[in-house]
Image (tube, rainbow, N blue to C red; front, side, top):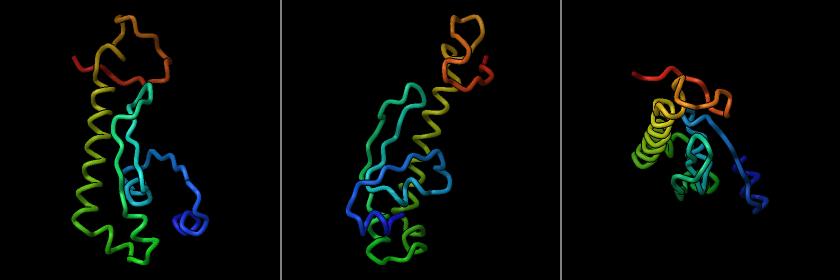
Length: 112
């Protein structure tokens, strides 16, 4: 995918939910972190790991670099923080609070 991006010079949009596998951080030149629902941009990050790979740096060298690990952990932390806020905020999921089931949110047990 990075080769196609580099060779074509065109913009590529990748939508993924697979943060743990590192694709979002590794492939992106610009990463948009979205809120769970409704999807709003929470943060915009400029990244260069994919460009480094396209320029010839080895994948293992990039993914083992302290700056890559730190960025991956930062993104994971932000995603999980958004998830926790969304999943455990009573206004979204508790029965009897006026929330309508099936509004595009994953029903999770409410913390009491």
